[in-house]
Image 1: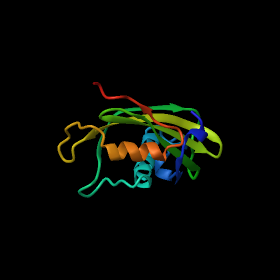
Image 2: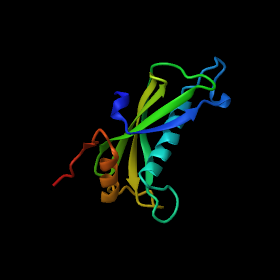
Image 3: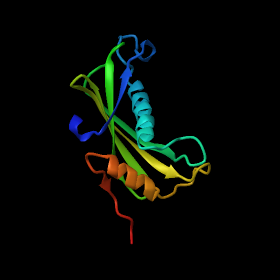
Image 4: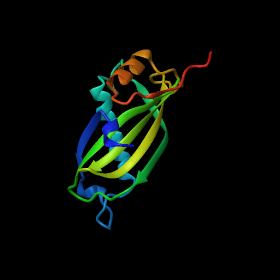
Length: 146
């Protein structure tokens, strides 16, 4: 994964409360950073998580590969991209950078659900179209079964 694969980046400064006794960002907080950046990514696409037209997603898989450590007051850039679009799920790829240094790479898989029901539902066509048009690197597509 390379920085050039990403269209969207969200800036984030490491806060003291995110660091452990060793003075580095506690590992679970990188998933918090992914989540914050994903919210901003969805905003950049024009979507909301509140209101009657909000999309509803549930995280079903999370992974991270740690390459370096962030510390208090580091200025980070979190890259997000839609990496895969399935029938009812999508996967987002993440990269966390301090300057040009890759600190973390990761992925989250989300399942789309009908609002308020938690019932799995196909990804809306308007979401697929908008995410695909936004990305510099096209998402991998899983074609529906015929």
